[in-house]
Every structure is written in C-alpha cells, then in structure tokens.
Length: 185
Image (cartoon, rainbow, N blue to C red):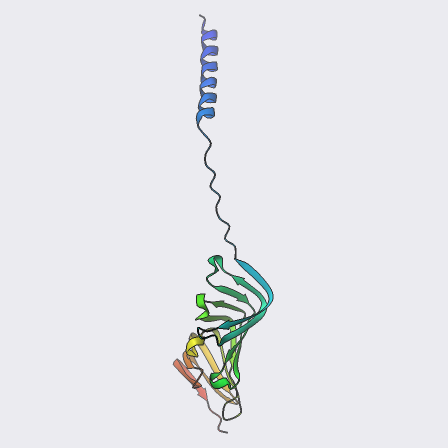
C-alpha cells in the first residue's frame, strides 16, 4: 500500500472516530437559570397594613410598589406613609424617595430625602423630622436613625447624628454632635 493511500485511510478513520464520539456523547442537560423577578408590581397603589390585632399599622401610597422575590418584602418608589398616632389623635405623615417594608410589615425603612411630620402637640405646632434614612417600627411607635437628623418644631431646631424616638410620647433623643436653636413660645 502506498503512502498516500495509507494517509487517506488514516484520515477517514480519524474523521469517522470524531464523528462517532460526537454522536455518542449524549445530550447535555440544559439547566435554566431562574429569572429574578418580583412576584408582582403595582402602579399608583394604596396599601393599608394591619397589625396582629387587625388595627391599622400604616397606610402607604405611591406610584410604584414591587413585592420582592418570594413574597417576603416590599420595595416602593416615592411612597407617602401615614402612621396612626396613639389614641387616634391625628397621624404621622412621612415621605421618602424610596422605602423597603420588611416581611410582616414590622419595619419600614424610609430611604433618601426622608421627612416625617407628627400631629400638632400641645403648642399647636407639628413636629418634623428630616434625614436621609429612617427606620420606623410601627408596632412599637418608634423611630431610629444613624444618620444626620434635623428636628423642627415651630422656630426651634435640633440637629444631630443618630436618633431614637418614641412617636407615642413624642420624645426624641439625638445621640451625637447635637446643635440646638430653641425659640421660646
């Protein structure tokens, strides 16, 4: 057998072997990666959250609400919240650029350009809290922040870093770097 014929037979055997291996390799199982999407999206929504006793915990309104994957929490864009004040004496009204509500609605995280205004007190002037991030605990009537906070009531202004607040008693504690301007009535 001459050398050219031997090369041709080897070439055909190689091609046939590769083709046979390709055919016998089996189909690989294609695993689809799940798409991370929300369970649902609401536009121009109004939501009333109830506590364990069935009383209103808070109301939220806004242009966009998304229930996160698994239905565990809610994300909102430009929400407006109403938290009932103790004893039914008015309400606390809050707004923010964004919000995140925990599973069970036990925590409301207000994010970016946050403002919350309480009902008018004995002086007749409402109290206003402004900050970048604020945690509201509706079941405890509590406010928390680790960011710079400004509290305004009438012409009096308190500013500091860190906040612990009791919305029921209208008592607020600024934790660090506190500045005050108090204007008597």
